Length: 254
Image (cartoon, rainbow, N blue to C red; front, side, top):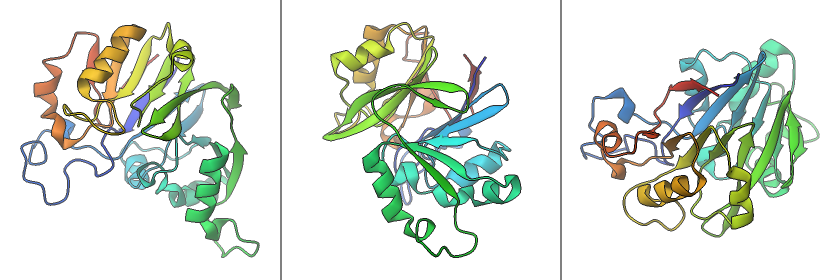
């Protein structure tokens, strides 16, 4: 049985947004405090993480995660990769490289953003990374069989991932029919739902619900949520029984 933990469920700016006085940003409810998007997946003593955003260190400390076997990347935007340097304690304490899985374009972006980790003469203590290029076909990570799902983030092709009967799709506003077929018969689907209003590169709440209604997973959780979507408790009351807003620190089993 897999355990899924939401390390972060917020949009690129997080919630609260710096300087914002809206009701969501001023909320005292912990479920309205959203770090940047990431999840941890655990099974049989192994743990993989999808995306390491700017809050990666804080998320691992909060969840008392001291070891990670691999990180898989959806795409190269900073809110999904900026925390990669924080694998260094795992390198140090567990005496191992961090296994990194990403498509070729994302690997090149990581090499640019963290060039000091890839130079010939590395400075002592830089992240120790072992890069694995993935394509749009199944691959193995630490005992997990991972099926990439190609989705569009405006004009940028990014990956979601299916593992068993669980799928994680973030930063998407279009999924082609042949990729939608990969998402049938799910126990749990996690899908982005940025806000109520139309957005150039993310599903709105209504659009996300439409996708869920087509795919018919047993359960669905919404993530990558902005402060424009309203308070957690307010939105949740409007959703069908099988759909819920995710929140930071929430865990479930599949």
